[in-house]
Length: 271
Ligand code: KIV
Image (cartoon, rainbow, N blue to C red; front, side, top):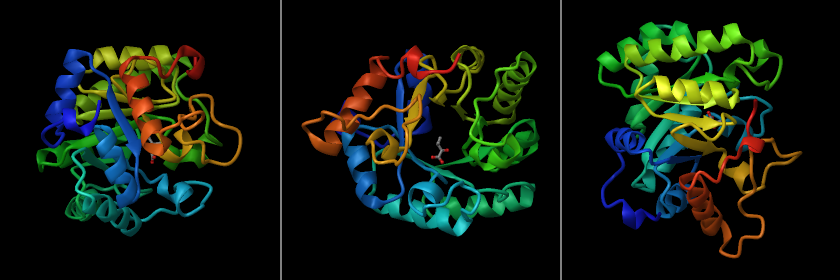
């Protein structure tokens, strides 16, 4: 699918209808105008201005050092490309622990051009999601391996394998939907748990390391282009490998494989 097949700007209601039709949603991370234009032209529906910028762009080993100012900078860069895709921006580490602080920092990100904000956590986010959605802010919640909590997890480890934790994650997803969340990102959880959550909620789920049964998929763009140093993660595929049409071709192939449910496979997922 190319941007030509989307004649209007992508909105949340497009994503909601895609879930209802069973059409997979494609998402990639982006931090600058060049990639924003390229990804949108390729047909990516959702651009995630991720706080992974702290690792990918700034070279930190975690996302913890990222600030609201950094996220506004990247969001501004992406918006200047005027992509047709929906722009989702991360609120960084400890920038949304209190409602007033969350509202203030959300205002900064949305005034920089974000159309939806993403926050990481669990049940403690319910009152914050309620307040943000009541005030007209579309909210995405990131569950599972939430990278801002890496030091609590003791590393980047699969979450929700323990049955009690899996039950809790499902209950959290339902409570967040009730609170007004309009999208969920599920990271590094068993594929059957991601499938259960996806079937239980009426809002779209976007998976990363969460198996093939989510409503959509996201990867860090530099990972799926094979640019990230070190051993590739199980759930990452290098779409530039063997590609004759360059970066644009790689992104179009990612879109094709996600839409055709060819990526990710169960082998690229956690049990
Ligand atoms: O910041 C980010 O890039 C993310 C993705 C890994 C989902 O949150």
